[in-house]
Image (cartoon, rainbow, N blue to C red; front, side):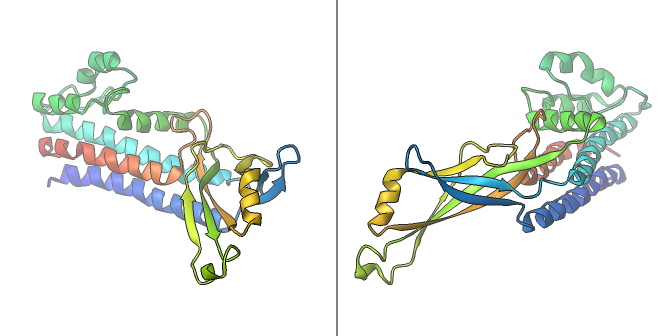
Length: 263
């Protein structure tokens, strides 16, 4: 592999360093149990409703390694474009950058100018990646995150519960069930409910299910929470980890075939 390719990889590696810091900070935050859940009876329906308690919102400081990871990955693409132009015998300039556009039409009207001086084969290979919205959206997502981070902090929010684990016990039904281990059912809610607010309903046990419990089927509930991208962001509501790590990894993998055009 060429030195230029190694340098591009170094920039992606730096992005992963920021991701590692971000992941550690998110874990430290969640280890403090910033979210709690309290059961409360709905007097109208007789259902048992679990309501969230936000004890500590996600630290704004999480946005710093988040933005750094995004920017390092995006700049790795621009550096790759710069080296492709040099390898093709051209001279990089102010317009040299890895082309990513909002639409295919905009991409087709500008991508050649962004790579002016690169070999025809390299330019065709970049075009084949379809790095525009509606093509390979991974490029577009990374590009938009980088732009948004330049103008505002990518502030994380308390994400809705990622899963609800229900543990069923049957010992109360019949003595024969006394030695049976609890059955645990993991549920993944479709509505991630972000950002989490105090008093938000995260789970509901219907009245009929509560009546079953009175007949000997016991059930206990546990909840897990996450940290998500805030509202108004292109990946809003999605969990920061692993969404961002997967995005950066996939973009890097997608451009590896371009390394053959470097020298």
